[in-house]
Amino acid sequence: MSGVDGHLVAAIPGDGIGKEVLPAAQRVLDAVAVRHDFALSWCELPWSCSWYTEHGAMMPPDGIDRLRETDAIFLGAVGSPSVPDHISLWGLLIPIRRAFDQYVNIRPVRLLPGLASRLRECEAFDVAIVRENTEGEYSDVGGRFATPAGEVAVQESIFTRRGCERLLRYAFDLARQRGGALVSATKSNGIMHTMPFWDEVTAEVAASYPDVKWQRMHVDALTARFITHPEDLDVVVGSNLFGDILGNIAAAVSGSLGVAPSANLDPTGRNPSMFEPVHGSAPDIAGRGVANPIAQVWCGALMLDHLGREKAAADVLTAIETVTADPALRTRDLGGRATTKDVTSALVDALP
Image (cartoon, rainbow, N blue to C red; front, side, top):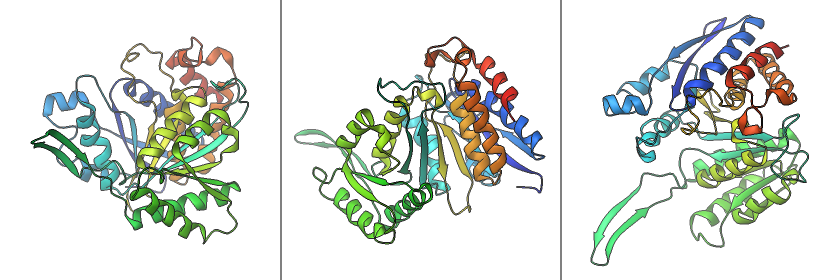
């Protein structure tokens, strides 16, 4: 548990490049912690697809109980071609999110100094995507059935008033804090039950925020807006599926998934929150020392901020901005030749 001078953090490198970028981020976070007179005690956990191959599960039976004793969870990546994705994710990532009621997934996306967007005419944008993280389309309700007409697969979406309302309040609070506008992703013209319900709850919550300008937008049009006018967007809130997809699109617009962080939050603080990059395990480049560690390091900044170490988090972001501004320190995903080690060392050196 937390002490006066530090935090106990579960470190799960996971699979692929997670085993490279997570230790890199730990190096940066340890360095900034020293500068700010606190310590991060790392509880190293080898849970991964390799663990699954050996043990038949993505984590041990007492995994959730062990994580419950920590202050935060720092995750590298989950996924391997050797294990089907629905097994790896539903065996580790999703159980953690739900056991600890991490109902907010937030993905800050902006164009970092020195980086060029994949969009030729985009010069600046700063978007916070707020995704519902424990229900919605990512449900385990359903199944596969044999019928006289052939095999049928049924997948149920679960939207509760409590789940929608608390997520939407978090998003409106964030929009108020940022002083910007909010866009709610919907598809109520095609999905006739859950999306009109989402829209109704959004309007009810919005009534408590008369100072926040907001609108709803069909997710297909919103996807196009991320490509044509991302600079017009500020806070975007969506269901589990919509928020996931929009988050990846926004990350690509920012230049690379390699610079895109995310946080799985229990805003109440009753449970540990989890911090993970958007990029996944990237098995095609794993083990080559070329993975971009910035997304994982930015996740570390989000974690520090959540743990109440705001000044240390700000220093990490300053270091990230210093490094991205230097063309010599760009990894391959950003068009450069710098290695994971090069960027990590530069980040440590750039800490104020």
